[in-house]
Image (cartoon, rainbow, N blue to C red; front, side, top):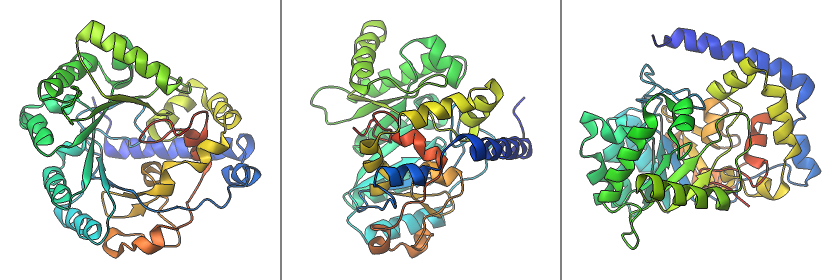
Length: 343
């Protein structure tokens, strides 16, 4: 039986209170660490990515999800807000539109957003969970993505079923492989096709991801050998200590150790290259954020209009980035971003 929205909100509120207590005594302030690396205050240096989170509705309920997405969520971007996104985009030359969720494809305006963005000459990325491609209502989704030359960035925790299913649910690995085969048949991941399929790796558990080059080579070898499927690149992303993953850390007694690991691995080069410095994230209700993680913590942009209807590129391009202790997740080790390691 799935938890109600009210019970989920209650659980998250309890987790936030626990996090507040632990934060006060165990984790150094992120801005102080930035200052020690001569990076504080952190400012944007332009906007190259216009990221749109179209809502929290998803056909999966993954254990690591920082969005707390699932089939019972009702936060969904309206067509009116989607139109405001395109109107804002049209006033700029931002080259890349990154559409995420939830499962973004389940939003009624998803295909319209893709078509309008492509009509403006922008490159479009779809943050796909793969299994959505197998839903009866999405039977033609792969063909639509291919026809619009959409880059697919797809989450796959591991090349074996046990680890993937542990994080994403029973049977998800098999369905994910079936979806990759469907994309491969359309040309995705095939040499010289121009149709890009990238995979995203999140560690299963309270660990930092391994080196991206090494794990990519391992995934490529094992997925081709075991399943006969192809992809272009693999990106590693650190699990962020918010939402469901935070609940796991607290419930398992791993929070303090995980945060200590992130803090100890702070990398000034990764901090200098964080994705928020070149990205603006639009929430499902049109609120603007520095990144999708700040969006989930309700931390809107500072020193600039904070709604897409008032989009002001000049002010957003040099804004001060809003940081908190979860930012250690993006700055540990080789760094973490929607495009993988940053160093």
